[in-house]
Length: 151
Image 1 (cartoon, helix red, strand yellow):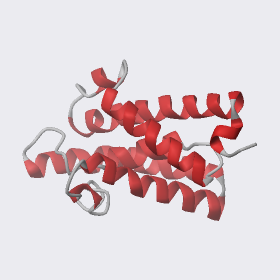
Image 2 (cartoon, rainbow, N blue to C red):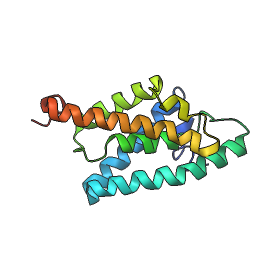
Image 3 (cartoon, rainbow, N blue to C red):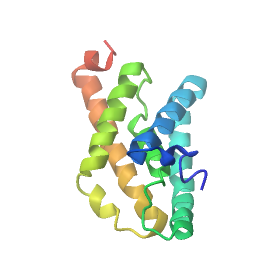
Image 4 (cartoon, one colour):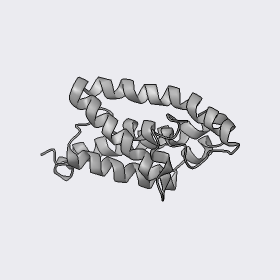
């Protein structure tokens, strides 16, 4: 449950997914600063794989489909959103905003991925949204780097 709830961040008072994104930002920043961008990929892969197990187990223990307090999917998705991007304050803030908006909107096929069973369904939509956010951020970095504080 500790992993599934994002170290307890999923118990935030309102919008647990938003609270759950914060450890993902912190982990991506720390891994990037401490060991480089490939470490962020390794961290995202760890949370994606461990998250399938943890989210599925939490779903069983709580007796609910995709319980709101389970936010390991937001951690992994937020880390995917930051893959191979510089972890400047501007990039982190924009990545947080873009990921959260896309997570609410769930563009195709993210919403359909929620229909997968167990932990896979909990994780897959946020990983897809993280990929979308990452692609948008990379495009923005190329098109207008100053908006991300990169110029």
